[in-house]
Image 1: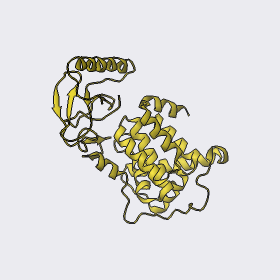
Image 2: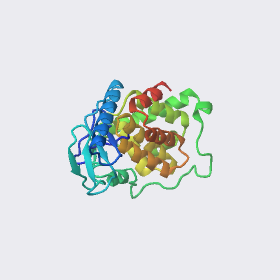
Image 3: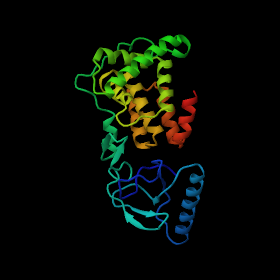
Length: 273
């Protein structure tokens, strides 16, 4: 079983937690149909015990235009439309702000760079990151987090943040202790509509060089993961690793996503760190 964000023919989500289920065991018929329906019911029960409501489950042999699908609860059958724009990605609304019509479009969202973005990494020849947990005083971390949060508050009310300030925030994000504190606070208080933190991370991702961009994309991916949006989390975290293959936290989160770690469990672990 694995997670998805839509039914084969609709753009809606499959469950209240934005995670649904699908089976890749092919086209059920006869006794196999009954077994598949029983399996879907069992998953519905156990996911319900864990607090996740399953509103639909579908069986497919492959994701391909014209390939068949079957509703494992109602045993209704149909044919897939273009899976790049329906089954895999759907027309997805993320946090009430960003809309995309396909998985490819979602991927591209996280790859966008401003035409005048800074691509030269001033840290390229130096150490990849400062281990803030051991080397940076708590007061220094607190000041960096406050600079980040102040920029977020101003963006949230329509004010601007110039490139010099954005560069300082980007450099701060390379300090592991600063990144970890912002990540922990995100786990404790997820992003709402118009949240200024999201605007800061988008700005860093679009305008700052590789490693700073990677941390911003990591935070966007973590926010999507906490929110139960697996498609956006995967795209953002993959883009984070493209920007900096050494981003170990992004790799850990994408491995957790692949392994099926629930958003709530990840949030609990991150908030307690």
